Image (cartoon, rainbow, N blue to C red; front, side, top):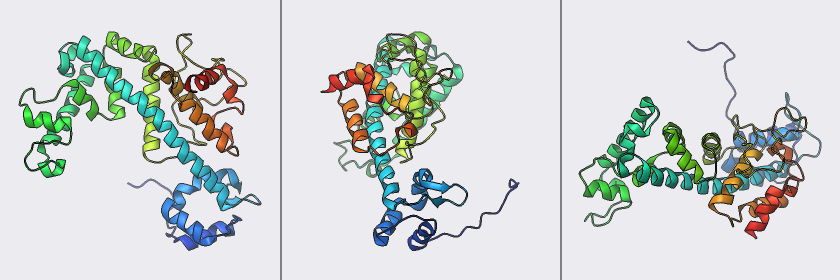
Length: 334
């Protein structure tokens, strides 16, 4: 049964018709061919959220006087650069977590390199079963692929990856060792795997990132959300993420000088469900896993290059870079 509501009957429009719509709503477009090219390769729907700050009326979608097509592109291009910058840090953290889980469990867990088969390493039987089923399914899918699917040479002397080599070389165990398995999991599956390990192992893994277990669990959950947005080329600027990283009160966890910055009880609190606390958490981990990373400097450079971007849409203050936390990061990367 269809839910009640109106029937959608809006027709599809080509680039020229969409440009006419923009112009009718008051957007200044000086080069129609250029605008058509951007609409063709980016899409009207993808650009639409970037027009919201420039709208004088959210009902009619009319634009504020003087708004140009380039004003919209300015934010779109910035957001693209911000996604790449965020993914750069997310990649480093994710790779570290994958290695920490595999190394810790292979050395300290029950079962050695095949620890993931041992239910005693998990706190939930259901979570254990889900993990095993997923790993077996991924392994079987790879086993069923033909050499041409894998891009292998006909003589089978070369393999495109370590998993293909394992499956072609070994018959037992049927699934590969931890360091191969961990690379098969999505970021979301990695988060769930970590969260379902017994507490003593989670603590060991979290210490590799200088974090308490509960904080790492929270941050990983947030990173999965942000990573998915980035992977699908979604918008980070002016967006409520729906999740946010837990803020530790422990002085061992690197954070902004004022730890109440995102507290709801703080009358001057910043919005905690926007991107800024995620950026802070990423730099907090980078202090541990890449002490001389230039990531903070590059973030600072990006925000300096796009000075017309309203930082409050990211949950940031104009003087964000004055905090000792960021000053230390800039110094470490210089």
